[in-house]
Length: 382
Image 1 (cartoon, one colour):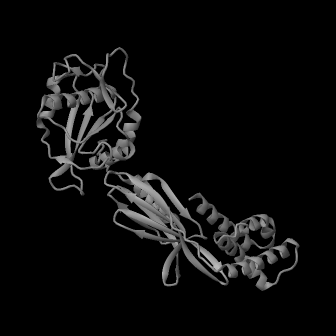
Image 2 (tube, one colour; image 1 turned 90 degrees about the horizontal axis):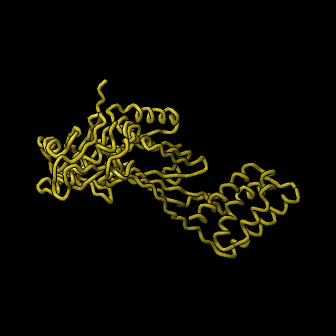
Image 3 (cartoon, rainbow, N blue to C red; image 1 turned 60 degrees about the vertical axis):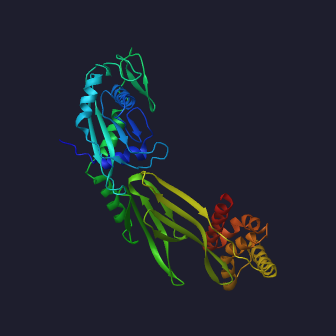
């Protein structure tokens, strides 16, 4: 069976998942105009070939070393590159230089991909003759991300074949795995308006949620977000209120909290989450706490705080409460959280102390209690 590898996807997979190592290197550019440039290229080819006797190795050209930013290089005619390798290396590997276009690059720029395939025998690749400061007979191996001269006195171990094969398999034009992930997400979230978005031609993000309309704005509960080809998942429960926004290179999530003073609940922004996608095939997830607690007059808060204390005392003494008192009890976790955020330092301690009484009195109140504790924990953590 002939395996058709998508070379652009292969480059993205190499950049996304691997620092420079014994089977992969990246360079800003190559310089074949000088003997030094040719010598350094031959050193890297020799080192990669000797360190990977049973698998391909790769050299990616046109990438900034420190940031992985793809800036591209000029189109290169590779007709003489194998001749150069054959002229200077004994047991030279088979070399292919391919010019790979990327959509975000100018029309005159490409990414160079050098594929190095060893001869599959036990002979070592070595310099055949002197070039620059390297002398004939020198042998190079990869140690981490560096090609170093080394005396060959041991048999080379095959340590990279499995991982290289995995990278190549994930770079095939057969996108069955990604499509299976998308279809599986769509099926499991079919009742919650599932959608998908592709970023940077590489990242597939699926998202779904139960839509509600509040005060002329769309909010989502039970939100499920999955970055399919990275196996990253985010989830927001039925109690969470979330807004989502799709940008060109970013997916934004804004989580709200519902707090109540009196009979009306209001949504307050709690935390922003940004999933950002970059041209260097990297992504970043960062969060920003944006919560500003609602402020009220101290006299008003003292009144409802003391009223809540009387209600808690009543359920602690196992006295019967009426319908209006039950409504007040269900709002109490939110009210006490607001009191705490307005300087009533003992408010949440009162709730913690009453946890078991609340649990045995009313399930809805206990759920609101857990929500308030979760919100407070997130605020304190941030």
